[in-house]
Every structure is written in C-alpha cells, then in structure tokens.
Image (cartoon, rainbow, N blue to C red; front, top):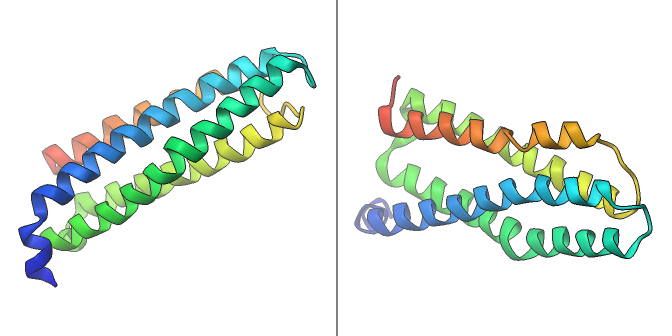
Length: 147
C-alpha cells in the first residue's frame, strides 16, 4: 500500500492543493454571504435568497471539498511519513480547528436562514478573517517546516 501511495504522491498532492483552494474559497465566501443575509429583514425574500445561496455553497463547494481535503491530505501524509514530524502535528491541529470553524459557521448560517441573528455583522466580518490567518500559518508550516 505504501508503494502505491508513493507512486501517486504528485497526484495526491495536486488533488489536495486543488481542494484546499476550493474549501478556502468557500470559507471566504460563507461569512460574506452571511453578512448580506444579516442585513436583510427576517422572513424577507432577500433573506430567503441569501439562505439559498449559503445552502448551495455548502452542498456544492464546502462539503465535497472538506471531505476530499481530509481524504487526500491523510493519504498524502501517509505517503510521505509525515505523522512523526512536528510541523505536521501543528498543521493537523490547525486543520482540525479550521474544520470546527467550518462546522460552526455552517450551523450559524442555518440559524440565520431561520431568521435568527446569533452573531452581529461586525462579528461576522471578524470571523471572515479566520481562514486567511489559518492559510498563512498552514502554508508556512508546510513550506518552511520550522520544526
């Protein structure tokens, strides 16, 4: 099995990077859509439109991407033996936290689609920065491998 993973290393890496880009794009868009939904009146057609858009974003981009990021990432880590390296442990922790952020934001979007406003517009704008910070940290860990 290890030989098979080693021969497919570049394909695994390409797929992982592609789906990380899709996942991050979705995580950048979701809070922005939620800001627009927040500004619309509860029960309005505009709110329903933004709720539909967030649901479509989740079904078409976010859910498939996070699944493939995890599957390809774990296969890639196995292929290169990354499980014993410190930088990988830090990266894995960040990806777990980012996955939790994804779940939290998706749950919040569903609440907003029901007319609730659990977060302020300012909080949503701040939450929009989380994927950018996580991306910077993960890229530094993977490229520089500081430990």
